[in-house]
Amino acid sequence: MDEDDGHRRSLRADDKIVTVATPDDDSLRSIYRTMVLVAACDDALRAAISAGTVTMAYYSPRGQEATAAGFGAALRADDYLVTTYRGLHDQIAKGVPLRPLLAEMLGRRAGTGKGKGGPMHVVWPDAGLMVTTGVVGSGLPIACGLAWAAQRQGSGRVALASFGDGATNIGAFHEACNLAAVWRLPVVFLCQNNGYGEHTAFSDHQRTARVADRAAAYAMPGVTVDGNDPLAVHAAVAEAVTRARAGDGPTLIEALTYRLYGHVFGDRMGYVPPDELARAWTEEPVGRFRRRLVETAVVSDDEADAIEQECAHLVADTLDEVLALPEPGPDELLTDVLAASGAAARSTGG
Ligand SMILES: Cc1ncc(C[n+]2csc(CCOP(=O)(O)OP(=O)(O)O)c2C)c(N)n1
Ligand SMILES: [Mg+2]
Image (tube, rainbow, N blue to C red):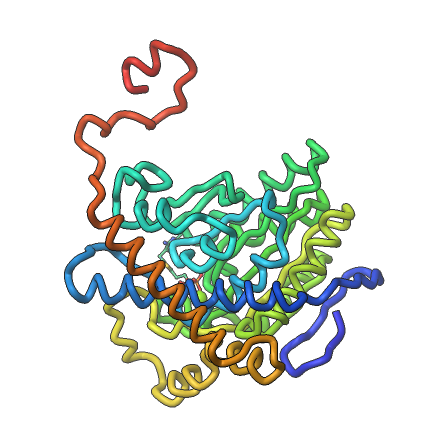
């Protein structure tokens, strides 16, 4: 990757130059719409929790929209994604439909897991979303398994593991990086470095200046990009995906971004320096990308407004619809616990 702006830094583990296409105007509008849809969903969910209409532990991805929209546009529909509890943006960007996604988050029977998994366990294989996990770091070895399967099947699919900066201190991160490098697995390790693991700032939880520096330990390329710029993320992921599909193994990408609403809904963020938070809001990625698209005449102000209104209405209508849907009943407590292999298993709910 070229070092063409202040944030991008490459620790190239080989000499291959990979050229990737930049998104055309339709793709740019689609990336913007994804970011707007995530922000609209996040606004609606936080408002619903505040109003008491919805009760759940909610980990807002607000501020990290660009990272998800950038990688979503760089992946194939059949590529795999493994994400975390802070995964709403990733799930939307990978193409999980809004209705079953929100229904799962709200524990409705029409949800991706029949309302029995909840927000920490959203799975939608039709869009390649194979796992959402609340166990920090646990998604990375699973992504290796998916990538190993793809490698053995020759399917050309790539697995992208999305995780936070805190997760890079977990043993599973290092085991997965090592295994992926040794077996040259088609994996993209995408660290969304939002500056904090729960209430611990990045500089208090690791000595390495950049998460991407850790790639050198596994002889894989590592790169740090501006995670608030969807095109920087897109370029890095597109390059990593191209390498992965060509059999050249994994890449570690660190997307520098920010959690604008703290760790979990209700976080008062007293541990966050106020000037840091104020600065982060000035770099808020959705508005920033809108300004860029308007300045470069990819959209007019009216078109950008129309995208925002369309997304706000879609989210409001879907949320209203989902709130009226039934929850799973007690009779479903023991169903879907194990994969049924025959009629007997099905009849016992096994
Ligand atoms: C194995 C494990 N250890 C600890 C926790 C508690 N925990 C939940 S979220 C979190 C912070 C993770 O931070 P990061 O990886 O940076 O992700 P972010 O929340 O910033 O998206 C921790 C420690 C957990 N869920 N799983
Ligand atoms: Mg973090």
